[in-house]
Length: 518
Image 1 (cartoon, one colour):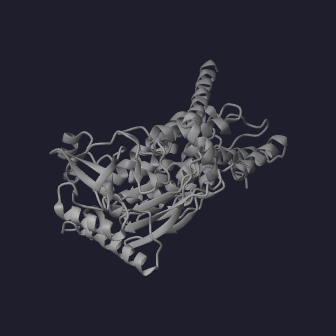
Image 2 (image 1 turned 120 degrees about the vertical axis):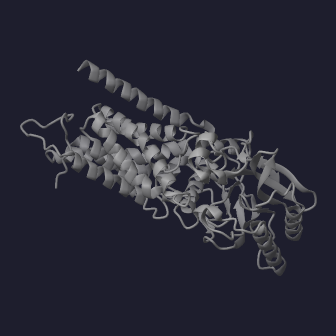
Image 3 (image 1 turned 60 degrees about the vertical axis):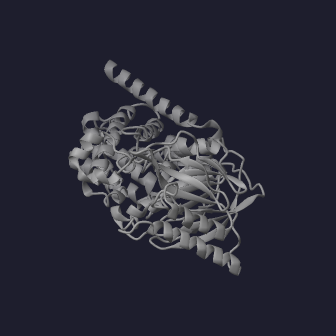
């Protein structure tokens, strides 16, 4: 069955054959189907081959149309993808969910406009894949600090495309997924009118197969013979949704202290190995341990019982109006010491942009309370025998934040996260897939401690070695390799991303120039 998606001005029409021109509804249907198929690639479903398949459908919906029509076709496909993928936002409110998906879809509309221009150039699948990287880059910067969630790379926690992260980070993974998908779209177009086989098609088939297969050939640094035993604590919370802290203060703190005492008891009983350090999640103490004697006593008692330093997740007061989300080293003898303050803050969750206007429009904005201030240095903290790289929750989605932490000497990586407001949504598994990608990208083991799940250990090859369930208390001691050798992605930084962006921008420039001359 041939799939013909030409439009008013197709790039080429076989001589002697009138093109079939589907209406807007046909293109819309293919675009929406592409968005839904792409959603299936992301956790918790995680059918990674659906990522290139979804991209292929989106490209077919756009091929041969004009930029104005492409914009709303691309926007529709984006909504079909982002609405289910970002459904974890719904506990905040359906209005926030719809607004976020609607705003992010604008970037897809811009991508669609640019894509149909470069589809008139030779080797257009290459340029479209470059533009996809540019779209993800832009979403990671704008507006309000960016929102890099739902990148193609984050659907590839463990797939043939994942090893490319070690060469060029998340942008290169997104590029290879997009390129494979657009090559598939090109093949459908080439075979559709009329069906024929030639060397160009054969080469494209080989390229579409080779892109994922060559991922297995990416070199990986080997084990270095060192490891550290890390105790991971998941204490759970009393409430649900936006009110996960419950009505009684210090319950979250007591939960994590109690679970640490259980760990210490298991060590004494010989059922668990003695950890070198213990990690608590972000927001594992719901009261400031600097100002509360009760909090200090609970944390100190837990640290003394387990006998090793604890990396505590705390929200601490800064002056009279501000706060910081802090990863705080708590020594069993000397108490609080070195700390890392979260640098990439969650808009409308940890601070309120356009505060006066937002507070006037929504009473929910008052739930933010004190406005968070960001830290100013990477999260490398010396704790016990290692210097861990601390990443706080939302930050794991941002390339530069994680890269800075690795460059500063952090190994292994520790992701302290609080997903309590989003428990049992698709956010925790999506965030775990990001940790899998970061492990491969930087040749670092990743330990995630979450208040309600998913706490996990990810090996440097992206394999999940252990994880908890959600909305349960849990603890474990995991043997984590210490890696210090850097991948090519770590050494070259954002260079591959910029090369791909500039290639895409150059292709758009050439396409516009040709269009004006014609």
